[in-house]
Amino acid sequence: MTEPSRSSSYLEDEDVRGMRLALCEAAQAAMRGEVPVGAVMIREGLVIGAAGNAREGLGDPTAHAVLLAIRRAAAGQRGWRLLDTTIYVTQEPCIMCAGALVNARVSRLVYGCDNPKAGAVRTLYQVVEDPRLNHRIVVRPGVLAQECGALLTLFFENLRSRQRRAKFSGEMAELVDCA
Ligand SMILES: [Zn+2]
Image (cartoon, rainbow, N blue to C red; front, top):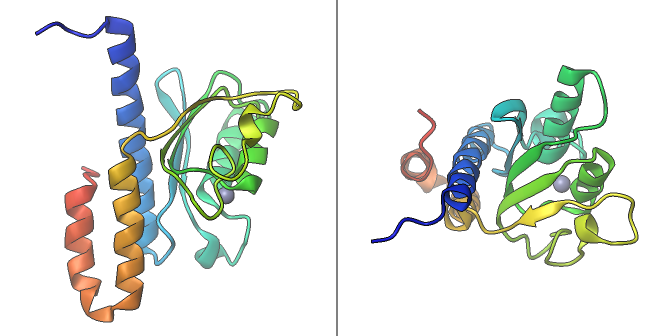
């Protein structure tokens, strides 16, 4: 068997690693009763901002995982330009979050599953790649898409059937390894 080229396989591994961290944020959000979406911002291999969706807990319609991760990363570095960063998000960002990523000058966006009802990166709109805007973001969709989508499916199934609540934690633990 021939090995894939070192640079591309390195990036693949880094993206899977980043997405696993985002999945853990999503799983923790689910345990708080939030729709499980997680986001992790990385620069030079270090996490500079991470968050799960907190819309219910904060009672804030803007408390999406991406927005919170951007705020935390910017606060940590005391500046609004998040240059040379990659953000990992379990689900394709919405219009609000895609707009925030452009404004934050994020370099690269890696996301998991598509968002058929609100996706603003590829599905409904292509906000972060729009040539009319003054900043564009390199996009890689579909990383661990199955796990990211399964977490959302499990969550909504659980909402519909209370008997599944106990089983939910076990199934989620199988999907997401947060050790
Ligand atoms: Zn959003």
